[in-house]
Image (cartoon, rainbow, N blue to C red; front, side, top):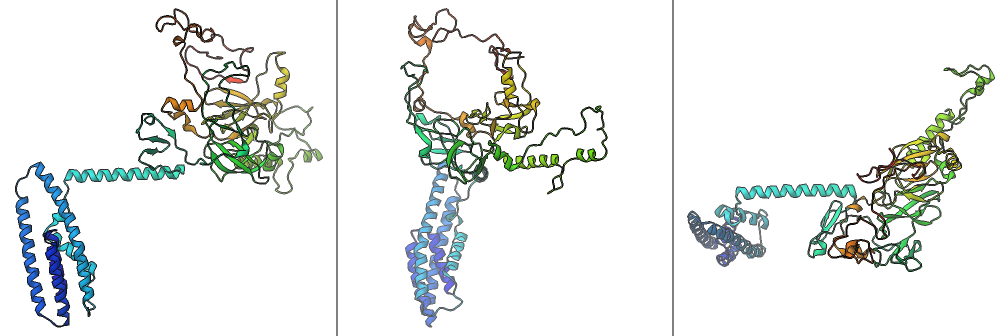
Length: 563
């Protein structure tokens, strides 16, 4: 009886709303006191509580009937919105009215001295109250949305789920967070944009590189940069459009990579003096630190190694050796090798290693394959003779023993496409140089003294096989897609405005002076009077670069190169 009375009274209070909450609370107090007395043996209080509950139920049913009668009338759109807001307010009022009732029910149950073991919990009573109230007036707890609104909600939920899946996949692939950190910053996969609260932020777009080191660089590997403003030691302007800019320190990057052995990558850093990122590495044995160009995909904790020194190459594997034939050179050359009998046949047999029982030639090829499998990793430096054809490389040196010269900016790379001989120059034109560069590399004879490297511009050029290159592509490939957003950001980089010739005076430029913006009827010229025409001569054996096998393709009107 106590459960039925409490549920009925609380349901009536929930339906009646905030106005009848006080009366319902009083009724609950009466019910709780009478419930306690009934448990002690009194029966008169049960009749009074039942009469009060029945009166409240009558009031709730009358209020519900009146609300339904009102809702049956035709209503305008304005009235519909008013009713919706009214329903929301009623929902809030019911929630507020349930709070004191919960406290009263809990207090009344705690005041009973002897409660049977079958007494339900307070949470069960409250859930039953809510169900009973929903039966009387469902609109008080839930405002039913239209079909169009439900479709819009489902569509928005699906869109949010798709965005979350995409963000999770990008974060797993790139190892960075692609969520929006603040209301003013938006991180979209590979770029970071800003909310245009100012005009200078509207078009700003920077690459998203959250793996970079946030602190200062290694102090011992930097030197101060003394800005010259484009002047030489005489004070004359030699480079126009330079001046100002932020104060910088130059990072001393190692482009030689002579030190052999494994080196740990401590961190990836931003370098204000170049477009690519740099990596701080530390030798595992000596502990020496140095900066190198960071290839794409290199992260802190990886290991890199240089195989430029001869002794380091011999540690991992050796190139296949070319063995001279053991048969007599005076014998006639036929398709089948000449037959040799006796001891000569034993001498001609393939030498076999005692440890493995494999011929030396096969063992050398096997060692070279194992060495390449271990050494062809991003950031490792190897001679071109040990790099497989088709490998992507960067930081390529042009002379044996020299530093890296080409493919050093952000996102650049070359591809090793073939090994060949250099085209011999005419008599008396660098024959000695050609003989010097044509020395055999590791595993190649004089006929394969150079490697053909294809650059991103389409140019194919020859590089001696004794030169070295790093495996992989240079980091920060999205540098070309960034947007500065304002002219002041160019000034921060030390760039001054570029002035047109027609905007100058006649003393400063051949196009200057005059009335209006006319350059007078003359051909375009540079500031120093040189004609701005396309070259009509193709580079030949005298004026062209002999190391270029195929020049880069050019647009119409510019130098076409060799046929």
